[in-house]
Length: 369
Image (tube, rainbow, N blue to C red; front, side):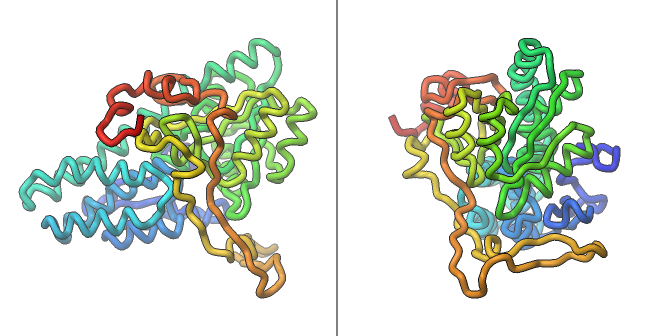
C-alpha cells in the first residue's frame, strides 16, 4: 500500500522480533497510528474491536496471535486456548478459522520448544501469501475493467461497497486489487464509493486509500447506488467477500445484497473478488448456514467523526432509548453474482465453477454433496 507515498503493509513484524505492529483502522482517516501487539489478548482485542478488519487481514492477525501465544505458553493447552480465544472474535469471516487451522496444523506435531519459531514462520508465510494472492486477483480482475474501457472508449465507473482494498488485507486488496491494477496500467477508471453505514468503512477507509493511491473516486450515500445504475453512471459493481459457499452464495458487508439486486435489474455485471481461502466448501446455502455477526446497537444510533477543530466526537443520531438492530453482513445469492474473481482465475458463481478452480478443496472430507 501507499501511505503518505511510502510502501507499507497493514501488519508488520516489529523491530523487537517479538511483536507485530498494525495500522489502527479505528482512527482513519483522521489519524494514522500504529498499534503494537505483543500478546494473544492484544491480537484478539485488535480483531474484536476492528483495529484490524477485512477477512484476509483478520486471518493473518489471528495467525500472528497464535505465534504470540506460543511465546508465552507453547504447550498443547496453550495452543488450544489461543485458537479458541481467537476463533471467538469474529464469527462470519471464514479466513479467521482457516488461518488458525493452518498455523495449528504446522505447529501441533512439533515439540513445545519448536513451536515458537514455527508459529512465527507460519504467520509470516501467510502474510506473504496474502500479498501474492491479492496481486493475482488484481491481474485476473483487470480484464473486466479493461474490456469496458476498450468497448466504450471512456472512463470505467466502478461501484464498490464497504472496504476490500489494501486496508482489508496485508497489502494489495481484493475487490480493489483490479482497480489498482487498472489504474497502474493506465486504464482510465473511477470508483463510486458507498459510505457503508453504520461503520462507514467506505467513507473512512476506501476513500482514504484510493486517495492515497491517486485513484479518482466519488463518495456516495449507500442508497444512491441504484439511482446511479439507472442513469447509466455505473459500468460494473465490484465487491469483496467474507465468506463464499461452495455454491457461490456470498456473505459481505450488509447492503451488498441490495446492490446486487439493483445491478441485476439494470443488466450490470456484479463481480465478487475473494481469495480461495474465503470459499467455504462445507456450506451450500449461504442464507441458512452462514453465521451473521450482530454488532452493538450503538453503531447504528451514533456516528463517529471529528469536529471543526479536528477533535474526535461521537454523536447520537437517533432518539434516546430507541432499539436498533445491527447485522454486520448479508448474503447475496449466487444467482445475482456474475462471477467470482480469485487468485486462480475467474469462475461463475456455481459449485462446478468454484470446484474447477479449487478441486483439491471442493472434495475435501466433510464437504456436502
